[in-house]
Amino acid sequence: GVRVDGTTRLMGIIGDPISQARTPQAINPIFAGKGADIVCVPLHVPADDLATVWAGLKAMPNLIGFGVTLPHKQIVPQLCDSLDPLAARIGAVNVVRREPDGRFRGYQFDGQGFVRGLIAQGVVLQGRDALMIGAGGAAVAIAFALQQAGIARLVVANRTFDKAEALARAVNEATGTSFATAGAPTPESGQLVVNATSLGLNDSDPLPLDVSMLQAGMTVAEVIAKPEITALLRAAEQRGAAIHSGIHMITGQVSLIADHMIAALG
Ligand code: NDP
Image (cartoon, rainbow, N blue to C red; front, top):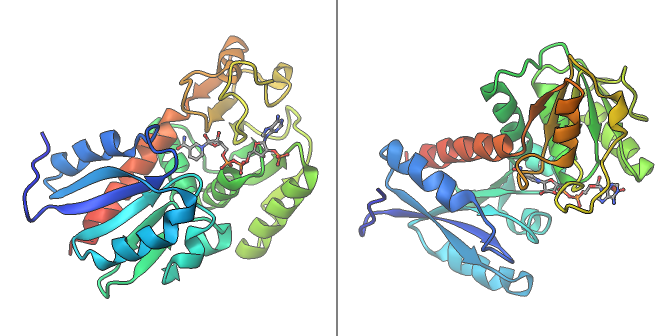
């Protein structure tokens, strides 16, 4: 179990609402298993009170950092003392860590967590082509991480096409490549198909793409973690594709964040 005493370091997770946060129950057993004297607790922080809370968090030396969830991800970069280059490129922060000099530095692990989840499940990325539906915050992070992970080419499809084009341009400019292209989903566009939209959270949502293009040999991966098996994954499985739930993105991320926090203990 988790042991807490006067020397325990505190990690928070800030959001509004916060009751849906899965980080505390996922990360505390990892800290305990690694013998790290850190406990993670949910902190309910309404958007209007973020600046007030921020000053308080900063003032507590035994707080080693915190996760950041909705609605704070895009505001927190402005409050951080410094940003990891990837977080700066993406324009969103999901982890803040107190660095040895006491300053708060912002990081973004959504994309790396997604990739770590795929690798943990044995999905091959090196040299494969990928198709991603979506161009929001999660999609931007995933596009950078797929490029880093050795995916050969990425086609980005999105309801708002301008956002797909902007995403592809941002990744290509930052990496000096022609890795990403905005385009329509076709069976030729990727052996790895990623749903990075919010479609699938609700039963009534339409499917994010025409599932008749899915076939054996493809891997269809989700960012949606709840439900664990979305309508898209069910359809993909029926058509013979391998499927990868959004829960692996959470697992992958939490293990990365745990390592990142433990490293700050020195
Ligand atoms: P954003 O709001 O930034 O982006 C939403 C995306 O979904 C956009 O591409 C948007 O298209 C698309 N979309 C939404 N509704 C529709 C619709 N009716 N038809 C077509 N496209 C639609 O959200 P995020 O990127 O921050 O998050 C996306 C999802 O990722 C969330 O559901 C979240 O739960 C999940 N997520 C999961 C994580 C995990 O660890 N498993 C971590 C982070 C996020 P358009 O641009 O046209 O509006």
